[in-house]
Image (cartoon, rainbow, N blue to C red; front, side, top):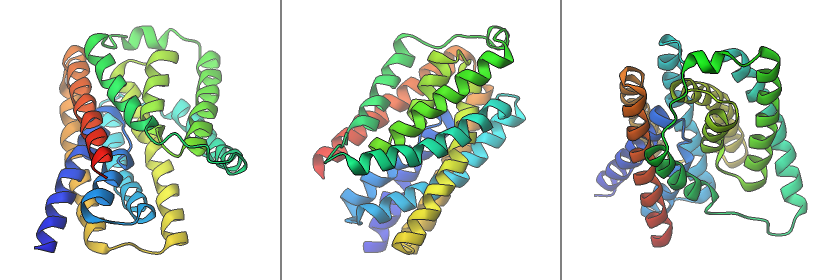
Length: 258
């Protein structure tokens, strides 16, 4: 019975995380961590490590799918990735000096609000309009956005995927598919760094939930990314909005139960 419960919880967690990653570049940690902590009684540090490990392959396969469909900005994505990684350490250091500075529901609320935003006010920017921005301006915007995302991720401890999607669409003016493709590309490397540090510091977690979450998240991320790249902008906005709204609501309920 214990094994069956683990399989069911990991399947639901992986499905939610995979859909969020494939559709919106959302971090699996936002879904998997609270599920494992609440329903399997797993220590928070191990749960986050499993979630980050699940993020790596799911984000990588999503980035590959978006890149194959020419919906990925690798050049500016790399610039933002390095800036995010650097300022995540800066944010963590600053947070360690501030007494009890936590914003636990930050990522969940952002997920819910972004979901509603995509339904009410869809992103209809075209690639032509996106490409009108000069390379120099885009580079500068990528650096500033990376600083903001990295610092807040390090300080708060969550919200990276959603913040990147918000900045890429609202500030940098990316059309939705390219924004998601670039976001999951960055998340592949940030998740790899995070998972590695968690396992080195805290040791390897329970292998069954780890393997199950990685497989289920990868499967659903692949399905979501394939659908997203074939869908029209209007359909993708609606689908992304519904997925994020449902996930945000579900995570809020899970947090209330825990």
